[in-house]
Image 1 (tube, helix red, strand yellow):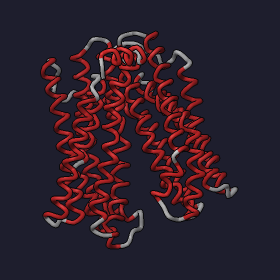
Image 2: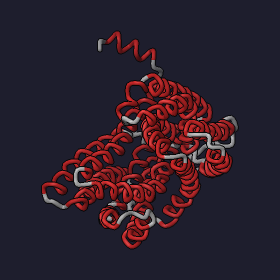
Image 3: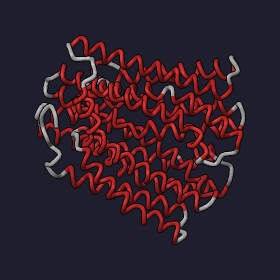
Length: 446
């Protein structure tokens, strides 16, 4: 690109936009690496046989649920660290991050022990065949040894995001993905360890990633003279800050579980179409979530610096980015559906249902874009209690809406309209909060 064209691009994209993109683009690639790791595991295990692949699906669902509930370790830490950075307290920011790492380690050990002990019970709840159950228990138990590292990876990622660094987590995530593929192939096929090799390879790759990011954070803490030893009050404060975000996360997961439950009850064709549509919806959500991560970091920093006007300005700009990104994603989802629907199924009934569902999903994407951004803004502001209440309200109103599709035999398209209603409810609660001043609490701590 020539110098004049670079200058033109800089004029087109303002300083706020460049700041958003600087954080959001690396965050997107880091987020994309996670589902790619799961796809690689599925491809490798799938060649072992159907029982192994089914076992991976069950064990992976349990593992993702355990780890997913702890996402507050990344989100809450990002907000707390960014606030202190905005206030000019770099040492305090890293001390806050170290507290988050200790909390992640403690939670990781507890969840790992619980997983090791309760794996057979958790797997049995899915009522699989005996051979699938045996493989699933093996995979889950081995994977449990990697839970502490996975949570440390989350917390360390949150620290670095709070420090306005999303490139380092991206590099580590992509590297871990490549290492995971190599280890899985070596252990599964080279050493003939079957599904145990896949679990071990993934656990080792995640452990390496967790250690790498923890080392980066610890080095930064030492450089700034921040404490490294466990601090009881600090760890407790991090845990208390995470409770509302856990509630928020649980409401979202409950809504998604209900969506799948109703789709399953509508019949095989409906659930097949739903599965593909939801996979595509989830991929688009990664792009929107990348903007939300930028929102967490920038909002926390601005409020820490006491810049209310700047917080308002960057919030409105990120809302615009969310709206435009949602519109572009929806346009692609709708406009290209005749091309990609055939990639997923040859069943004409499923294709017809899927094409209809994708139109509805596409129409809701701009709403999703603004919802994701505002969610990130309020997380960055440390407004977890409101997000928890708003999540409960949206879920309570959504439950009868989704179930009415089942009661009235409305079909899969009607179900996705109902799910869009859930996102609209979230938009209304978040927009109401954004228009108030209650969340604009300034200072190094909330």
